[in-house]
Image 1 (spheres, rainbow, N blue to C red):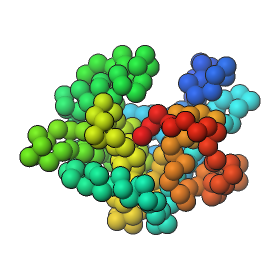
Image 2 (cartoon, rainbow, N blue to C red; image 1 turned 90 degrees about the vertical axis):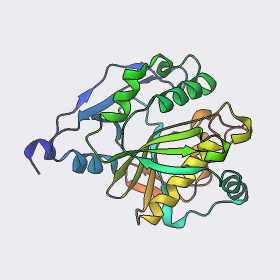
Image 3 (cartoon, one colour; image 1 turned 45 degrees about the horizontal axis):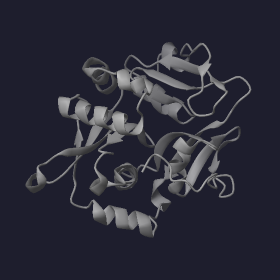
Image 4 (tube, rainbow, N blue to C red; image 1 turned 180 degrees about the horizontal axis):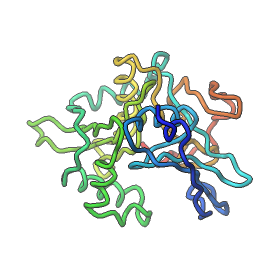
Length: 256
C-alpha cells in the first residue's frame, strides 16, 4: 500500500439539518477514494462504519450525537420468516441480473418514479440524468447494478435496481430503488435485501452491509427485520440486541 492509502486525508462537512431526527444537526467526516488501492481502502473503511458515495467514503461525525449506527446482516445465519418466505414466492418470477455500473435511461426513469412515490420533496428529486450517471459510474471500486425485471411474457419491465459494492467481506448496498407505485409488486425493497443476502452467502461473503440504522427513525425501522444483525459500537461489531431494536411504533415503515 502507498502512504496515501495507509494515511488518507480526512475532511469534515459543515453542520446541516439531520434528515432522520427532527431538531438535530448532522456532520460527516469523509475522504477520497482513488488510485490503485481504492478498493482496499474502501474495504478497510467499510469495516469501521464508512459508506461510499461515488469516489468518497464518509461516516457521521455529529457533535453530541451517535444515533447513526452501522449495521450488517450475518448472511450464513439468516433465515427468512414466514412473511419473508411468502414475499420471495410472490416475486419468484423476477429475472435478476448483475450489470456493470453503467447508467441507463430505464434505470433513471425508475428512480424518478421511486422518488416521486416514496420521497417527494426530498433532495434527490432534483437529480438529472447526469447526476444519476455520476452516482452509478463514478466508482473506483468493484460495483454492480443489480436489476430486477419482470419476465419477457409480462413485458420485461424493470421493477427494481440496486447499486451494490462487492467488498472483501460482503456486499454493501449503496442505494436501491424500485417500482413503489405498483401495488401488485409490493415488498420489492425487502426482496432486494433478501436477494443480496442469498447472493453474498452463495459467494461465501459473510455480511451484507445495510448502511446506518437510527433507533426512533421510522424511515430506518425496516433494517432490523433481517436477523441476526450486527451493529458497530465503541467496542467493535456485536449482535444487535432484540430489546434495543424493538419497533417504536406499530405503523408500517416507508421501506416495504
